[in-house]
Image 1 (cartoon, one colour):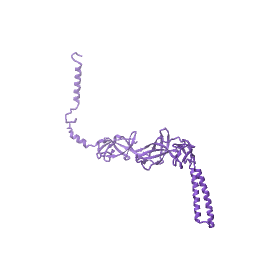
Image 2: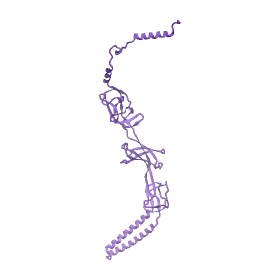
Image 3: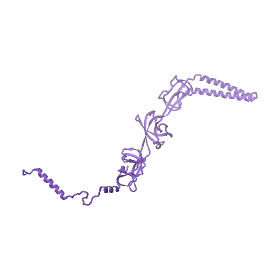
Image 4: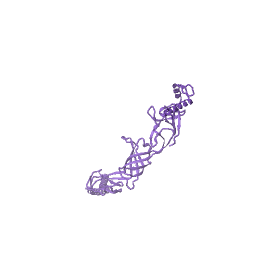
Length: 368
């Protein structure tokens, strides 16, 4: 290479040559003129032309599907029956043959009160009964012979009836000193100790009948209409057990304070393994309902604040359809209030209003 020509000179000459070649083969663009040489439209004309074209939106046709809902009910277990066996007469506890936790049958003795003067009152009543029987017999004999007035016989009869009632009452009072179990179950507190003085209505012992065991919980007024007696439930206890149950009772009226309804779920407890008062969670499978699973991003608000989606109607017209939020899923939210199949605007819904005409671009949506 000659010493007088540098590499930079050669590079400059190459660039100039390339530009010249490009200009020779290309088109010259003059302001306001298109590539073809025709006059270009003004900005105002271009905006007017764009305004006349319908706004392009993305549309997906969604289909309703069966929504399986599990209703959770939180509560506690409780025995089917809890009976406080109370004294029908007063007295000191002389015997208590049962202990806490013992299983008893109907008729088993729970407490024995001292008789006190009850035996003496029974003997006195029996003696008065014997005397009344003699008086009645004598009056009846004299009346038949005409030696006694009929009123005397009636008075003797009344005295005899009163004596019989006194004997029956004295015997019943003695029977009441023995307090027996009215139901089968397990002895629970409170219960009386030997030496305790029981008044009428005092508790001798408490019996729990825990077969069946109940799980009692509260259900909101929004969900109670989906429940019916006899529906199966799955109950999980905080202690780890899982038991099958059945809804036995649904309260006909709500609690005034919480506005919730009491629900009782019955569980078999033949072996007595389930305990009273344990925290529990019941799951009830409700009947499936038809709903739509959508992305929460396509939800929008109407002018009145209601939540809904924008859909395409006949003539590519936009319409707003309000929806009910039913719940959330792994892939979106479940909504109700839409037709079985509906074309929903999924792209551009925030830029169009109800009644506007748009150009829909349909996308394929797989049925859920």
